[in-house]
Amino acid sequence: MLDESDLERYSRQLVLPEWSGEAQERLRDSSAMVIGLGALGSPVAAYLVGAGVGRVGVVDHDDVELSNLPRQPLHFTSDVGSNKAQSAAAKLSLLNPTVLVEPYPARLGRMNAEMMLDGADVVVDCSDSFATRYVVNEACCILGIPLVEAGVLGFDGLTMTIRPGSSACYRCAFPVEPESAPSCAEAGVLGPVAGIVGSIQALEALKLLSGVGEPLLDKIVQVDGRTLAHTIVSTTKLADCPACASVPAATQSG
Amino acid sequence: MSTLDLTGTPCPLNWVKAKLALERMGAGEEIVLLLDPGEPIESVPRSAREDGHDVTVDGTRVTIVKR
Image 1 (spheres, rainbow over the protein chains, first blue to last red):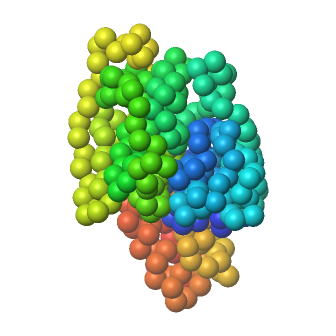
Image 2 (cartoon, rainbow over the protein chains, first blue to last red):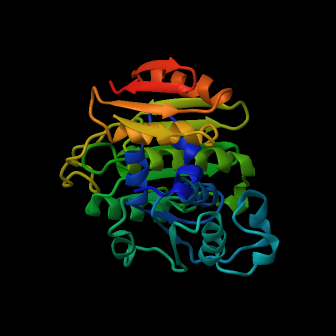
């Protein structure tokens, strides 16, 4: 049951005709993992914790740098030099003390990805490297966990949602892993572009966890910050995808 | 038939409480809401109608039959 304080805290989402007490309880009983607490992970984690997802794990091995602050609103100037997972968790616990926030100040890689993500109901990949995205995608395919992928560079961003076994996975959409890509440090990024894309990721994760709305499956949304043009392109699950071809289709719908 | 006293409960918390009460009821069941005049009596019946329920307003007393 939701208590009096929950009703007040979540009243603006509970009044939505599409939302319900049951949807709110589904959020409370669910668990999300946010990989990377930078420009995408800051809004994602803040919205998931704010909305009342019961348990939110935040994973980042990096420390806060001064050059992060314009686009990573969970970190403050006094946090420079602190681990990002710890810094984010401190703010998130203040934002919503009813949520169990678990910081993982560790690097997610091929060796530990499955162990770290096991038990999550949704994974939101806010990492800034292609290598990590493929590792997260493969772990989610093996574990059967829905995944929200995204990336931003310069003024451009894209997001896609994956239900392993039933919709196109990240490797289906991008079969060839790029050799290297310009990092944010080289290419630059304008903070609000990451904020827009991270907000789209948070919305997708809340839809997956609550069962409300339609997730962006078999589609990629591209956002151009210069014009705010949104383009949705279709993508298809590949029958011979090395990441997801052997994954049984999820039994749940919606 | 149950009664939910929402006098003193502001918008939108009054509708949140009514909506959750309706969620726990079966179709065709009735609930009476006691609301404050002004914004509450104007908006809560409208929200209930938008959700498809049968709504009867008598002063600040609202009877809702769950769809």
